[in-house]
Length: 346
Ligand code: ADP
Ligand code: MG
Image 1 (tube, rainbow, N blue to C red):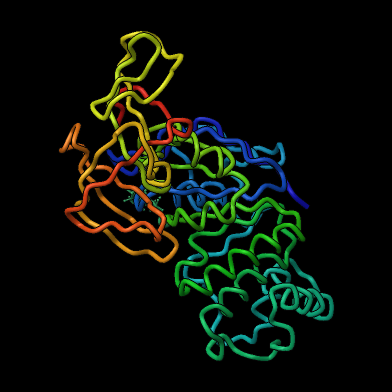
Image 2 (image 1 turned 45 degrees about the vertical axis):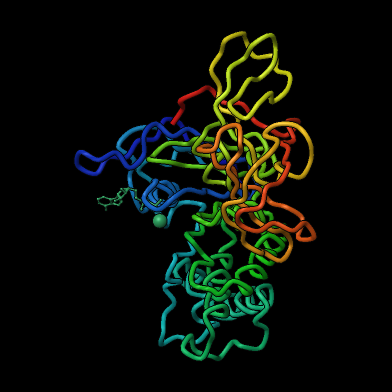
């Protein structure tokens, strides 16, 4: 089963500090939603409020149309995979996975059958009798997932579930998590501070900062057209170029950045992704290379444009293109891919 989550104006205070400040969000049934943001922005607090492990100071929460305020965690249609997995070390895997069913009074035969099915689902077939100490970190993560899924939750909550795994394992688990979510059909809410993970896995990314939602939407939309400067900088890398609108064109210290429909004389910040700065004629034109890093698929360079030497730009150049510190190059911003934000936004 699956359920929609409606969060309306949720606030959470800790003393004088505001961990969440008027957060409103709808997560559709069966969606894979990722809460993304820097440490301390309120992700865990929001997840704990959905799961019933923290109370909001104000606001409303419904899951599947049911008001959740005052409903204890165990009575909610949610289960949580905690960051440290919280497995029972003295229990076998089958008992770990069947634990939630036992708490619900399900008999041994039925819960063992379900636990076996779940261990199979997460790729741990045949490991029923092992103990958590016999497993690798990745396998323990799978057991925690199996345990949370065994009770058929409408909503699965995951707090930095892949944080303890190395990069390769993390990438393969991202794919598996998404595949498992598609199979079970539950709504998944997954907390991470890892931008790549969020983009790889999410149907909807919710970018949080300082207790508020800055932007939300499908990964491509949020990456290509970030709603705020914070989102542009946090999700990938962005060059910020100041510009003013004159006669329907964007005038910047780097030169003419093309046509715009923004009102005359508006001061704007032009967000330029490094992958949209490449060889060619146009703005910024002649640049001096300050720094280069070979990154395999491309060469990352930091350059000082002759037109505005203090306005350094990051660019991703083809590796076949020679560029060493001190060289001069002709570069061009692909103005069809820039995003415009009001000037001076935080
Ligand atoms: P995240 O998961 O994004 O790193 P948290 O939700 O854990 O952030 O924390 C958000 C803010 O609330 C932080 O400033 C944190 O210090 C504060 N906070 C979280 N839990 C508590 C608590 N139990 N007591 C006091 N402050 C807390
Ligand atoms: Mg957290």
